[in-house]
Image (tube, rainbow, N blue to C red):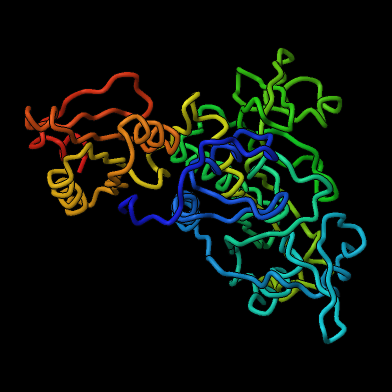
Length: 410
């Protein structure tokens, strides 16, 4: 992608109506555009990041047997009435169609997935299964804040598993727990993300959250350093130390909830009469689990924890491009290198603009935060080399043109 052709631009001024760092820098870097409080448009660069996060999630969910579908976002009132949540889910956006029927914009999809799967599952031979989607969700938050971390419109990977008994649910629940850690490892936040015991609400005694340490976080968690799990502040009074090992020496941290998992048991299968026939031909209740993860929230959280005073530092796996190529009035040589990098299947954002100074180009590169900055100039070409700087490093180095592709891992 040539920056001269990219329709978006970076912004020097910090948006006055944004208090969160992730929203400020993502808007300034040309990744997102604010439409309303808690509602953002993903611009080309931002969408590339978001899609890479989604791709990692999809790959790991597929490995554990998840089957992707896409459910409707416009959901009928009667489904929410079946589970007694039409009047008890405060964050529902409700609307009425021209047909006189009432609907809610999908805030979560237990009410839709359960009757959908019921149409296809009849026997123990059909179980267990897991289905998931990555879809836009809508929640009528009283106060949208923290940029992409808490919005009124956001993306969600929501998965739902269906089992013949609690033992089967527990086995799959553990598999998802470990899969989530694999996802966070690929996203570059594994070492600061903790499995956290939380209130189970109406579903079970405990649920589990995944909390990423972040000074901008809304949650307070208490971490056990012995077993690397945490407890949410909301239930700390209910437990005497670490729920896993009993350690009473827990330390407090601020964090952002980036995912959660619940054992739903029969909370949604019973209202919809979702049963299966066991080996003896007896009708038994389906047991369910639910597994959420927010790609857009992850994007905002990663920006909050991976930056410096110049801008974003994207983890390599989700950066919109791997290389930020800058030409300092040496466009012929830079053009040739741009084509060579593309031929080697290395993703390149090429600053070929001629109306900006070197300082302006460097500042914008730091703001946008791609893993590698490569500068082509008269000085570097005299050595048949380019200047290469890792975004996370303080110093640049000269790399010979003949060695550049292998240096980049291409």
